[in-house]
Length: 348
Length: 258
Figure 1 (cartoon, chains in turn orange, yellow):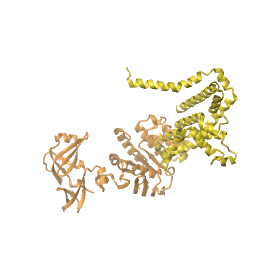
Figure 2: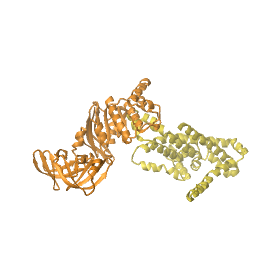
Figure 3: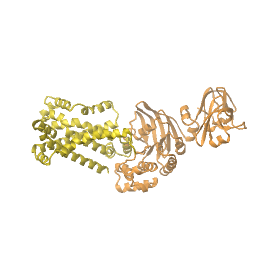
Figure 4: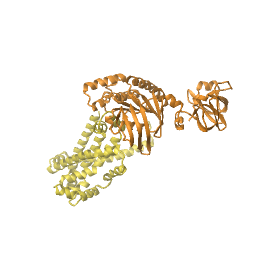
């Protein structure tokens, strides 16, 4: 288990601000944030590579705040793998064991076992220069795991890979974590990674940790406008609550009334995910509480999906499949009906 | 394929500059008779001067390596106040005239200098001694080593060191097994440049230590005393020896890299 208590670190003009986080034993925690949010500085602080200004870092009940990196027993994997280019794969994996003065026989055994888990037994004598991106990443993982770390820190471990390899390695990370069950903190800007891998997610912005929780909660119900924008809530509007009845609040946004589940008062910020909006070419009966007639202002073809901008009195973004777009014969200036459920509307 | 005007003019100007660089060296070697070379090679004073040059330049290079490597590493890896200033200072010994460097060193290491006076009380003198030669050589050549070593360290991904530390390596172990090991090629190149620069130093050396003669000094002395014919065979001999060593070092570097 790892506990971060009121961690502060100034780094030039940037600052990590009072970060409090607790990651449970064997948990896979993902810290999600855009570039420059402070993700790398944060895990480097945990690894002991930067002396923190204040706060505490506790690993398995031991305060490691003032311990140097080599005494923390933390596995670290960087985005660009950081394999030692002048050593073979075997020497790379062995490095930590040699540093810890593990006898040769035990070293060989541990290298064999770890290589088997990572499925890299056949490349042990190769140079890192001759490995594919996926192989390099597995070697970097093996090197970090072979020392049996208390915590595994992964800094954007899949970012340097192409899309198919990233999918494959994502599955692998899941399998390896299930097998080894090491407490893991993985930082990324990729929401798919966060959704598919994590037990819990934290969102970091400008050096501040905003939200921590199960991915479903964090992704569906962000508590901060910046976090909501980062997580794909493109329809964010300020409005005022007009009325509350039958468990629904009516919110006026520039004359457009949106119904939302729950009892709210006063000025509020409304957020709706573009994929929660359904588009119809003609008026149909729908159980959705929010139904509007609008006009397509613009659209962007994203390949399998199409993003539409629709004017319903306020500009709304909607995401539909390419097939739906073609079937509905949608085009600019065309009038469409849109609908979304009251439960899809999130109040920040 | 027809070559364009730009390529032709570049080839032409390249040929001129290469001729200017290579021809004097080849001319010096091939216009010196074997008899004259043997005569120079058996001249005790000449042999001693070449030996002294090789010895002092090697010592200066070792000192540059021992003291310059940590500085190069700090400049490459750490951010600190005055870093840019130090970086600029490293250019000074390369930029200033070497006679000026000699005068500056004389003012410091001479019998009345801030360093020279207390050390003279301990029996260490710099005027006309081997120490003076080494100091002069070190002053003009160490910056070349430090700059080359700094570039070598800068070219290494700093995350390698971080990973090594996280894997349990102490800073010293991580430095030697990762950063130093990976920078060795650049360090070797820097040391070779430093050694060659130290070996060829004349201006600063002659002001601080005219005697004992280093090879460039004795060439100058023979030239001013007896003219070109007396100094040419020594120059050719020194050139052949240094070129030989330089090529051997390059061969060693290539072997070690392979």
